[in-house]
Length: 390
Length: 45
Image 1 (cartoon, rainbow over the protein chains, first blue to last red):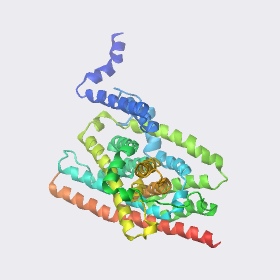
Image 2 (image 1 turned 90 degrees about the horizontal axis):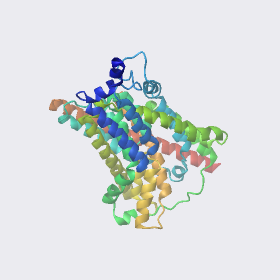
Image 3 (image 1 turned 180 degrees about the vertical axis):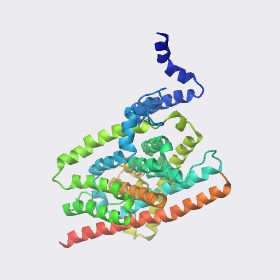
Image 4 (image 1 turned 90 degrees about the vertical axis):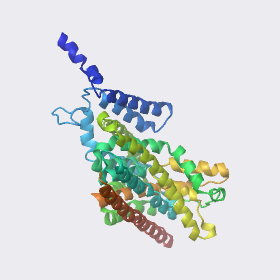
């Protein structure tokens, strides 16, 4: 009887043991993420499962994550999910099929020049990597070059890419990288407007970008685009093939017009299922001993700066483009900020800022064009990081 | 970490930046040309 009670109290004993406070703190972090999701509506589809996964993995002697940190013949269910979906990169790739099925490239087809904003706004990735490396001047446990690159990928503002690179280059920091990436994505409405306002004049913010966005691109173009992009990307950036291939496959299923059921499934059931499993599994990587560190604080800070640099990079590129573009084709520099991959939130935020200056100025469609370009650009940037450091 | 090693890593990060940013632009430029070609070929038809 005494032994049974002792066994029941082992979990509580672990919390009281030296270092046990870290588990309690992580459980509070999990609760905070759940509260943010439910009360503030910040990325609830992800933060809620991540928060719950965080609690599950930090309960003392949790069987849910058994075998994740040490070898075990009886792995917990989160360990099984981790090994079958994250460690082998399956979940992010499947998620890209769903994202591809949701993306409408039409605004991009109407103004193809917005593609370049998807490249300019990847500036934050490389700046964040540089900042992570600079942290090594004072960090007792410094980041390796690959870990710095994985931290930089927070600037892609793209969850699946962050998982893909993070798992390959910095599995130790996966939890922190994912929390930073998804938290700041949900904070885009707070992060971007002040940066955009600081870098543009009122006159620039009022530039109109009128075009016929109601006109749909020909079906032939909508079908050929995902196929040709996949082939071209496979040739010029082979490391991007699985990510861009999954994204473009999803888009082809959407646009071809003969696989509506598959398109619906990819957009709803597949995306929701993967998001659910991905979130709780990512949360399960937030082990107290890896998470409550100075490195995590640095990753969170660098992640925020990555979003700031992304926004600044996109806006400055648009301003530079305006120097050479003819008067009637000048772009509103704010849409440069939409080159990040946070789709469609960034476009909505920029439209809101434009409306504040001039309620009759509608730049939503070019902003969405830059936003979907950012989706493609972030994958290509991830492929660049992979090919440089793999 | 010794300062020399950190400086080496900074150089490596700058090198990655010098390759990566133009690299992303280059690939997206290829997509741009592809898209323009697709649109133009359809317009000709």
